Image (cartoon, rainbow, N blue to C red; front, side, top):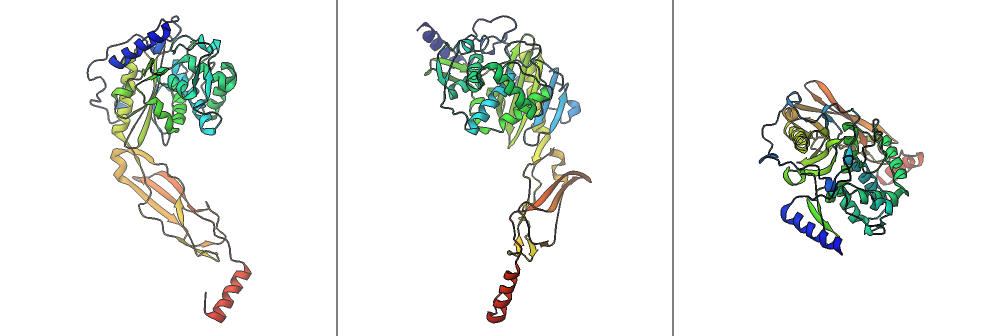
Length: 412
Protein backbone atom coordinates (compact mmCIF):
# COMPACT_ATOMS: atom_id res chain seq x y z
CA UNK A 1 0.00 0.00 0.00
CA UNK A 2 2.89 2.31 0.89
CA UNK A 3 4.44 1.78 -2.55
CA UNK A 4 1.15 2.60 -4.31
CA UNK A 5 0.77 5.85 -2.40
CA UNK A 6 4.38 6.81 -3.09
CA UNK A 7 4.07 5.92 -6.77
CA UNK A 8 0.93 8.02 -7.07
CA UNK A 9 2.71 11.00 -5.54
CA UNK A 10 5.65 10.61 -7.90
CA UNK A 11 3.34 10.35 -10.91
CA UNK A 12 1.69 13.61 -9.90
CA UNK A 13 5.07 15.30 -9.59
CA UNK A 14 6.07 14.17 -13.09
CA UNK A 15 2.84 15.21 -14.72
CA UNK A 16 3.02 18.63 -13.11
CA UNK A 17 6.69 19.37 -13.59
CA UNK A 18 7.70 17.28 -16.60
CA UNK A 19 10.86 16.10 -14.83
CA UNK A 20 11.99 12.58 -14.06
CA UNK A 21 12.55 11.36 -10.51
CA UNK A 22 15.24 9.12 -9.15
CA UNK A 23 15.46 6.39 -6.57
CA UNK A 24 18.59 5.48 -4.69
CA UNK A 25 21.55 4.56 -6.87
CA UNK A 26 22.84 1.03 -6.71
CA UNK A 27 26.49 2.11 -6.88
CA UNK A 28 28.68 3.98 -9.31
CA UNK A 29 28.66 1.17 -11.85
CA UNK A 30 24.86 1.08 -12.08
CA UNK A 31 22.46 3.40 -13.79
CA UNK A 32 20.43 5.40 -11.32
CA UNK A 33 16.67 5.09 -11.37
CA UNK A 34 14.97 6.59 -14.42
CA UNK A 35 18.44 7.12 -15.98
CA UNK A 36 18.74 10.04 -13.59
CA UNK A 37 22.36 10.86 -14.20
CA UNK A 38 23.13 14.20 -12.55
CA UNK A 39 20.62 16.61 -14.01
CA UNK A 40 22.04 19.57 -15.89
CA UNK A 41 20.14 22.75 -16.48
CA UNK A 42 20.18 23.25 -20.22
CA UNK A 43 20.28 26.91 -21.22
CA UNK A 44 17.25 28.59 -22.74
CA UNK A 45 17.11 28.01 -26.48
CA UNK A 46 19.42 24.99 -26.18
CA UNK A 47 17.39 22.97 -28.71
CA UNK A 48 17.09 25.78 -31.25
CA UNK A 49 19.01 24.83 -34.36
CA UNK A 50 20.77 28.10 -34.95
CA UNK A 51 23.41 28.20 -37.69
CA UNK A 52 24.14 24.67 -38.90
CA UNK A 53 27.13 23.86 -41.15
CA UNK A 54 26.21 22.95 -44.72
CA UNK A 55 29.33 20.86 -45.28
CA UNK A 56 30.65 17.86 -43.36
CA UNK A 57 33.98 19.64 -42.96
CA UNK A 58 32.26 22.29 -40.88
CA UNK A 59 30.80 19.83 -38.38
CA UNK A 60 32.23 19.81 -34.90
CA UNK A 61 30.55 17.87 -32.10
CA UNK A 62 31.80 17.20 -28.55
CA UNK A 63 30.92 13.48 -28.66
CA UNK A 64 34.14 11.37 -28.74
CA UNK A 65 32.44 8.75 -30.94
CA UNK A 66 29.53 9.45 -33.29
CA UNK A 67 27.86 8.57 -36.58
CA UNK A 68 25.10 10.01 -38.77
CA UNK A 69 23.09 7.66 -40.99
CA UNK A 70 20.04 7.96 -43.24
CA UNK A 71 17.42 5.31 -42.55
CA UNK A 72 16.08 4.44 -46.03
CA UNK A 73 19.39 3.90 -47.81
CA UNK A 74 21.69 3.29 -44.85
CA UNK A 75 24.03 5.97 -46.20
CA UNK A 76 26.56 7.23 -43.65
CA UNK A 77 26.82 11.02 -43.93
CA UNK A 78 29.37 11.67 -41.22
CA UNK A 79 31.33 9.74 -38.63
CA UNK A 80 33.89 10.21 -35.88
CA UNK A 81 35.64 7.22 -34.29
CA UNK A 82 32.54 5.25 -35.27
CA UNK A 83 34.25 1.86 -34.93
CA UNK A 84 35.73 2.39 -31.48
CA UNK A 85 34.41 -0.32 -29.15
CA UNK A 86 32.77 1.31 -26.14
CA UNK A 87 30.28 0.51 -23.40
CA UNK A 88 26.78 1.48 -24.56
CA UNK A 89 24.94 1.59 -21.19
CA UNK A 90 21.17 1.42 -21.75
CA UNK A 91 21.44 2.04 -25.49
CA UNK A 92 21.91 -1.75 -25.32
CA UNK A 93 18.13 -1.93 -25.05
CA UNK A 94 17.73 -0.98 -28.72
CA UNK A 95 18.58 -4.62 -29.47
CA UNK A 96 16.37 -5.88 -26.65
CA UNK A 97 13.46 -3.88 -28.02
CA UNK A 98 14.21 -5.02 -31.58
CA UNK A 99 13.96 -8.69 -30.59
CA UNK A 100 10.66 -8.01 -28.81
CA UNK A 101 9.23 -6.13 -31.79
CA UNK A 102 10.31 -8.81 -34.25
CA UNK A 103 8.73 -11.49 -32.05
CA UNK A 104 5.46 -9.55 -31.98
CA UNK A 105 5.48 -9.03 -35.75
CA UNK A 106 6.19 -12.72 -36.37
CA UNK A 107 3.33 -13.79 -34.10
CA UNK A 108 5.64 -15.46 -31.56
CA UNK A 109 4.52 -12.88 -28.99
CA UNK A 110 1.41 -10.76 -28.51
CA UNK A 111 1.29 -7.36 -26.88
CA UNK A 112 -1.52 -8.82 -24.76
CA UNK A 113 0.68 -11.64 -23.40
CA UNK A 114 1.09 -11.62 -19.63
CA UNK A 115 4.67 -11.31 -18.38
CA UNK A 116 5.51 -12.47 -14.86
CA UNK A 117 8.41 -10.92 -12.96
CA UNK A 118 10.93 -13.34 -11.45
CA UNK A 119 12.90 -12.74 -8.28
CA UNK A 120 15.99 -12.14 -10.42
CA UNK A 121 14.25 -9.53 -12.59
CA UNK A 122 12.79 -7.82 -9.52
CA UNK A 123 16.31 -7.52 -8.11
CA UNK A 124 17.60 -5.41 -10.99
CA UNK A 125 18.94 -2.04 -9.91
CA UNK A 126 19.25 1.18 -11.84
CA UNK A 127 16.36 2.42 -13.93
CA UNK A 128 13.29 0.44 -12.93
CA UNK A 129 9.59 0.50 -12.21
CA UNK A 130 10.07 -1.52 -9.01
CA UNK A 131 8.44 -4.75 -10.10
CA UNK A 132 7.86 -7.23 -7.31
CA UNK A 133 8.48 -10.94 -7.61
CA UNK A 134 5.38 -12.53 -9.14
CA UNK A 135 3.97 -9.20 -10.35
CA UNK A 136 2.37 -9.47 -13.77
CA UNK A 137 1.90 -6.98 -16.58
CA UNK A 138 0.85 -7.29 -20.22
CA UNK A 139 3.74 -7.10 -22.66
CA UNK A 140 2.49 -3.76 -24.00
CA UNK A 141 2.99 -2.21 -20.55
CA UNK A 142 6.37 -3.85 -20.03
CA UNK A 143 7.50 -2.64 -23.47
CA UNK A 144 6.38 0.89 -22.66
CA UNK A 145 8.42 0.81 -19.44
CA UNK A 146 11.51 -0.43 -21.30
CA UNK A 147 11.25 2.12 -24.11
CA UNK A 148 10.18 5.20 -22.16
CA UNK A 149 11.83 4.68 -18.78
CA UNK A 150 14.61 2.19 -19.59
CA UNK A 151 13.22 -0.19 -16.96
CA UNK A 152 15.83 -2.87 -16.29
CA UNK A 153 13.42 -5.04 -14.31
CA UNK A 154 10.95 -5.12 -17.22
CA UNK A 155 13.71 -5.79 -19.77
CA UNK A 156 14.93 -8.82 -17.84
CA UNK A 157 11.39 -10.10 -17.18
CA UNK A 158 10.59 -10.03 -20.90
CA UNK A 159 13.97 -11.55 -21.80
CA UNK A 160 13.31 -14.45 -19.44
CA UNK A 161 9.81 -14.87 -20.87
CA UNK A 162 11.19 -15.06 -24.41
CA UNK A 163 14.36 -17.11 -23.91
CA UNK A 164 14.18 -18.70 -20.47
CA UNK A 165 17.03 -16.67 -19.02
CA UNK A 166 18.80 -13.37 -19.56
CA UNK A 167 21.93 -15.27 -20.61
CA UNK A 168 20.04 -17.16 -23.32
CA UNK A 169 18.43 -13.91 -24.47
CA UNK A 170 21.86 -12.26 -24.70
CA UNK A 171 22.92 -15.12 -26.99
CA UNK A 172 19.97 -14.26 -29.25
CA UNK A 173 21.02 -10.63 -29.18
CA UNK A 174 24.48 -11.60 -30.42
CA UNK A 175 23.03 -13.81 -33.15
CA UNK A 176 20.85 -10.95 -34.39
CA UNK A 177 23.78 -8.55 -34.20
CA UNK A 178 25.80 -10.85 -36.46
CA UNK A 179 22.91 -11.02 -38.93
CA UNK A 180 22.82 -7.22 -39.08
CA UNK A 181 26.55 -6.97 -39.73
CA UNK A 182 27.37 -5.57 -36.28
CA UNK A 183 30.89 -6.93 -36.41
CA UNK A 184 32.27 -5.08 -33.37
CA UNK A 185 29.49 -5.88 -30.91
CA UNK A 186 29.25 -8.36 -28.06
CA UNK A 187 26.35 -8.34 -25.60
CA UNK A 188 26.50 -10.06 -22.22
CA UNK A 189 23.13 -8.84 -20.92
CA UNK A 190 19.91 -7.23 -22.12
CA UNK A 191 20.11 -3.97 -20.16
CA UNK A 192 23.58 -2.41 -20.28
CA UNK A 193 23.18 -1.96 -16.55
CA UNK A 194 26.54 -3.37 -15.51
CA UNK A 195 29.78 -1.99 -16.90
CA UNK A 196 30.87 -5.43 -18.03
CA UNK A 197 34.25 -5.09 -19.82
CA UNK A 198 33.07 -7.64 -22.41
CA UNK A 199 29.78 -5.83 -23.12
CA UNK A 200 30.89 -3.58 -25.98
CA UNK A 201 29.65 -2.09 -29.23
CA UNK A 202 30.30 0.86 -31.54
CA UNK A 203 28.44 3.90 -32.83
CA UNK A 204 28.25 2.27 -36.27
CA UNK A 205 26.80 -0.96 -34.91
CA UNK A 206 24.24 0.92 -32.82
CA UNK A 207 23.17 2.83 -35.93
CA UNK A 208 22.67 -0.48 -37.73
CA UNK A 209 20.39 -1.93 -35.06
CA UNK A 210 18.60 1.40 -34.62
CA UNK A 211 17.90 1.50 -38.34
CA UNK A 212 16.47 -2.01 -38.18
CA UNK A 213 14.26 -1.12 -35.23
CA UNK A 214 12.68 1.97 -36.78
CA UNK A 215 11.73 -0.03 -39.86
CA UNK A 216 8.98 -1.31 -37.55
CA UNK A 217 7.00 1.91 -37.61
CA UNK A 218 4.62 0.97 -34.77
CA UNK A 219 7.41 1.11 -32.19
CA UNK A 220 7.23 4.90 -32.56
CA UNK A 221 3.95 4.75 -30.65
CA UNK A 222 6.27 4.05 -27.71
CA UNK A 223 9.51 5.86 -28.59
CA UNK A 224 7.73 9.20 -29.05
CA UNK A 225 6.04 9.10 -25.63
CA UNK A 226 7.16 11.98 -23.42
CA UNK A 227 5.20 11.07 -20.28
CA UNK A 228 2.78 8.28 -19.41
CA UNK A 229 1.70 6.10 -16.52
CA UNK A 230 1.31 2.43 -15.61
CA UNK A 231 -0.54 0.54 -12.86
CA UNK A 232 -3.82 2.33 -13.60
CA UNK A 233 -2.21 5.74 -13.49
CA UNK A 234 -0.51 5.33 -10.12
CA UNK A 235 3.08 5.17 -11.39
CA UNK A 236 4.53 7.80 -13.68
CA UNK A 237 6.94 7.34 -16.59
CA UNK A 238 9.05 10.09 -18.11
CA UNK A 239 11.30 9.91 -21.16
CA UNK A 240 14.95 10.80 -20.58
CA UNK A 241 15.38 11.67 -24.27
CA UNK A 242 14.73 15.41 -24.18
CA UNK A 243 14.75 15.55 -27.97
CA UNK A 244 11.30 13.93 -27.95
CA UNK A 245 9.83 17.03 -26.40
CA UNK A 246 12.06 19.76 -27.73
CA UNK A 247 13.39 18.74 -31.18
CA UNK A 248 11.16 19.01 -34.24
CA UNK A 249 10.45 15.61 -35.79
CA UNK A 250 12.14 13.53 -33.07
CA UNK A 251 11.03 9.88 -33.25
CA UNK A 252 13.26 8.26 -30.60
CA UNK A 253 15.25 6.35 -29.68
CA UNK A 254 17.26 5.50 -26.54
CA UNK A 255 19.48 7.19 -23.97
CA UNK A 256 22.07 5.53 -21.77
CA UNK A 257 24.35 6.42 -18.90
CA UNK A 258 26.78 4.81 -16.48
CA UNK A 259 29.83 6.36 -14.89
CA UNK A 260 32.11 4.32 -17.18
CA UNK A 261 30.06 4.52 -20.39
CA UNK A 262 29.37 8.22 -20.04
CA UNK A 263 26.32 9.81 -21.60
CA UNK A 264 25.13 7.92 -24.69
CA UNK A 265 22.27 8.39 -27.15
CA UNK A 266 20.82 6.89 -30.28
CA UNK A 267 18.61 9.68 -31.63
CA UNK A 268 16.22 9.45 -34.57
CA UNK A 269 14.18 12.16 -36.24
CA UNK A 270 12.02 12.52 -39.35
CA UNK A 271 11.06 15.53 -41.44
CA UNK A 272 9.43 15.60 -44.87
CA UNK A 273 9.48 11.81 -45.07
CA UNK A 274 13.23 11.48 -44.47
CA UNK A 275 14.52 9.91 -41.23
CA UNK A 276 18.03 10.12 -39.83
CA UNK A 277 19.88 8.31 -37.04
CA UNK A 278 22.52 10.06 -34.94
CA UNK A 279 24.46 7.93 -32.45
CA UNK A 280 26.78 9.56 -29.90
CA UNK A 281 28.78 7.67 -27.27
CA UNK A 282 30.91 8.37 -24.20
CA UNK A 283 29.91 12.03 -23.91
CA UNK A 284 31.15 13.94 -20.87
CA UNK A 285 27.73 15.37 -20.06
CA UNK A 286 24.07 15.06 -20.95
CA UNK A 287 24.27 18.48 -22.60
CA UNK A 288 27.12 17.24 -24.81
CA UNK A 289 25.16 14.22 -26.02
CA UNK A 290 22.07 16.26 -26.89
CA UNK A 291 24.13 19.00 -28.50
CA UNK A 292 26.03 16.43 -30.59
CA UNK A 293 22.90 14.58 -31.72
CA UNK A 294 21.01 17.80 -32.42
CA UNK A 295 23.85 19.21 -34.51
CA UNK A 296 24.19 16.03 -36.58
CA UNK A 297 20.45 15.70 -37.22
CA UNK A 298 20.06 19.36 -38.12
CA UNK A 299 23.00 19.16 -40.50
CA UNK A 300 21.38 16.20 -42.26
CA UNK A 301 18.00 17.90 -42.58
CA UNK A 302 19.60 21.10 -43.82
CA UNK A 303 22.08 19.66 -46.31
CA UNK A 304 20.45 16.51 -47.76
CA UNK A 305 17.25 15.34 -49.39
CA UNK A 306 15.91 11.95 -50.42
CA UNK A 307 15.28 12.33 -54.14
CA UNK A 308 13.00 10.04 -56.13
CA UNK A 309 14.62 9.79 -59.56
CA UNK A 310 11.87 7.67 -61.15
CA UNK A 311 10.17 9.22 -64.19
CA UNK A 312 6.79 10.75 -63.44
CA UNK A 313 5.25 9.06 -66.49
CA UNK A 314 4.40 5.37 -66.67
CA UNK A 315 6.97 3.50 -68.76
CA UNK A 316 5.64 2.48 -72.21
CA UNK A 317 4.80 -1.23 -72.66
CA UNK A 318 7.26 -3.41 -74.57
CA UNK A 319 5.97 -5.55 -77.49
CA UNK A 320 6.37 -9.32 -77.02
CA UNK A 321 6.92 -11.52 -80.08
CA UNK A 322 5.04 -14.87 -80.12
CA UNK A 323 3.54 -14.13 -76.71
CA UNK A 324 0.03 -15.02 -75.56
CA UNK A 325 -0.08 -11.34 -74.59
CA UNK A 326 1.24 -8.85 -77.10
CA UNK A 327 2.87 -6.50 -74.59
CA UNK A 328 4.46 -6.52 -71.14
CA UNK A 329 4.55 -3.60 -68.71
CA UNK A 330 8.06 -2.64 -67.53
CA UNK A 331 8.52 -1.31 -63.97
CA UNK A 332 11.48 0.04 -62.03
CA UNK A 333 12.47 -2.72 -59.64
CA UNK A 334 13.48 -0.65 -56.61
CA UNK A 335 11.62 2.16 -54.91
CA UNK A 336 14.32 3.37 -52.49
CA UNK A 337 15.15 7.03 -52.89
CA UNK A 338 18.53 8.49 -53.66
CA UNK A 339 20.15 10.55 -50.91
CA UNK A 340 21.79 13.63 -52.38
CA UNK A 341 22.75 17.10 -51.25
CA UNK A 342 19.93 19.57 -51.70
CA UNK A 343 22.16 21.72 -53.88
CA UNK A 344 22.61 18.77 -56.26
CA UNK A 345 19.00 17.60 -56.50
CA UNK A 346 18.14 19.77 -59.53
CA UNK A 347 21.30 18.63 -61.36
CA UNK A 348 20.38 14.91 -61.39
CA UNK A 349 20.03 13.38 -64.83
CA UNK A 350 17.94 10.26 -65.41
CA UNK A 351 18.33 7.99 -68.43
CA UNK A 352 15.99 5.06 -69.13
CA UNK A 353 17.07 2.33 -71.56
CA UNK A 354 14.79 -0.62 -72.37
CA UNK A 355 14.60 -3.47 -74.86
CA UNK A 356 12.61 -2.46 -77.94
CA UNK A 357 10.98 -5.90 -78.20
CA UNK A 358 11.01 -9.13 -76.22
CA UNK A 359 10.77 -12.76 -77.30
CA UNK A 360 8.27 -14.92 -75.40
CA UNK A 361 8.34 -16.45 -72.89
CA UNK A 362 8.90 -13.54 -70.51
CA UNK A 363 9.18 -14.14 -66.77
CA UNK A 364 7.87 -11.70 -64.17
CA UNK A 365 10.89 -9.88 -62.73
CA UNK A 366 12.98 -10.49 -65.86
CA UNK A 367 15.32 -7.58 -66.49
CA UNK A 368 14.27 -5.62 -69.57
CA UNK A 369 16.21 -2.40 -69.10
CA UNK A 370 18.04 -0.09 -66.72
CA UNK A 371 17.52 3.36 -65.21
CA UNK A 372 20.78 5.27 -64.76
CA UNK A 373 21.07 8.36 -62.55
CA UNK A 374 24.08 10.62 -63.02
CA UNK A 375 25.32 13.81 -61.43
CA UNK A 376 27.66 15.91 -63.56
CA UNK A 377 28.71 12.83 -65.48
CA UNK A 378 29.22 10.62 -62.42
CA UNK A 379 26.98 7.55 -62.18
CA UNK A 380 25.14 7.56 -58.83
CA UNK A 381 22.90 4.55 -59.38
CA UNK A 382 21.89 1.94 -61.92
CA UNK A 383 18.49 0.42 -61.21
CA UNK A 384 17.13 -2.57 -63.14
CA UNK A 385 13.85 -2.26 -65.02
CA UNK A 386 11.89 -5.51 -64.96
CA UNK A 387 8.79 -7.11 -66.47
CA UNK A 388 5.78 -6.68 -64.19
CA UNK A 389 4.11 -9.91 -65.36
CA UNK A 390 4.90 -13.18 -67.10
CA UNK A 391 4.00 -13.72 -70.76
CA UNK A 392 3.74 -17.31 -71.97
CA UNK A 393 4.87 -18.33 -75.46
CA UNK A 394 2.28 -19.27 -78.08
CA UNK A 395 2.08 -22.99 -78.78
CA UNK A 396 1.79 -24.48 -82.29
CA UNK A 397 -1.86 -25.11 -81.57
CA UNK A 398 -2.35 -21.42 -80.59
CA UNK A 399 -0.77 -20.36 -83.89
CA UNK A 400 -2.81 -22.87 -85.91
CA UNK A 401 -6.07 -21.85 -84.25
CA UNK A 402 -5.36 -18.18 -84.96
CA UNK A 403 -4.67 -18.96 -88.62
CA UNK A 404 -7.89 -20.99 -88.94
CA UNK A 405 -9.92 -18.16 -87.41
CA UNK A 406 -8.33 -15.71 -89.79
CA UNK A 407 -8.90 -18.02 -92.79
CA UNK A 408 -12.56 -18.90 -92.10
CA UNK A 409 -13.87 -16.02 -90.04
CA UNK A 410 -11.50 -13.14 -90.75
CA UNK A 411 -10.71 -12.93 -87.03
CA UNK A 412 -7.32 -12.63 -85.46
